[in-house]
Amino acid sequence: MKDVAQNTKDTSGKILKAAAKLFARYGYDGVSVKTISREAGANSALISYYYGGKPGLYQAVLKQQAETLLRLAERLKEPGSEPLACILAFLDEVTGIFLKEPESLHIIYREFLTPTEPGNDIVRQQMLAFYDRMMEAFENAKARQSVKPETDSRRTAYVLISIIAFYLMTYNYEAISEANRLPGDDDFARLRLVYLDYLNTISTGRETLQ
Image (cartoon, rainbow, N blue to C red; front, side):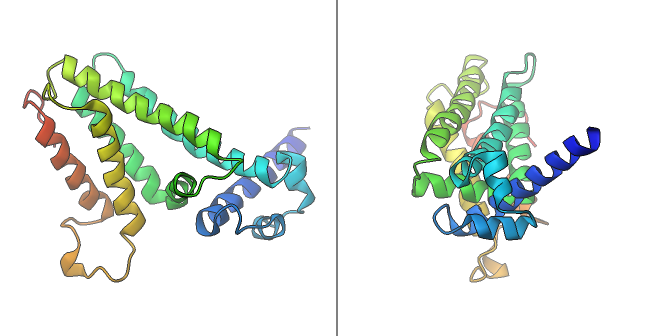
């Protein structure tokens, strides 16, 4: 029974991974069930069996990406942490995930730009909840005088995620010469310097960020 359960998990996982890759590259309408099954090395009938069809599979992919971000965002509520240092550590983790699995960001932003019927509610509900967690973290930072009082918490959350998203959507763009790239030893270091600079501009100086 354990072998059957493991095989089921492995097969459904392969389908989910293949779907994430293809949906990120071609969008929901640009991918067929047959293409996903071929990429996953699985029978196409299993997509209906595990996910109820292409819409259910797409929803499963979006939920997986959104839930990962929400789990990370819950750490922003950890008691006793210095608020800005906690936000910086959170942004570091988000950046690391997106650099390792860039398709997750592509899927989310593709859904924002061209909403689909299966995915619209998931993105609106779960991704807006993600932004809400960030906004709450900045409100906490203001209350603890780590952030300047005039800082708009929601706008700041959007700006920081937009900084990360823009970089990760363009960092492989071949037309950007090495001379015009941001300083840093690698993509993580380059991007981190940007959002670290931004956090320092809204900081009261009570915390030392590095």
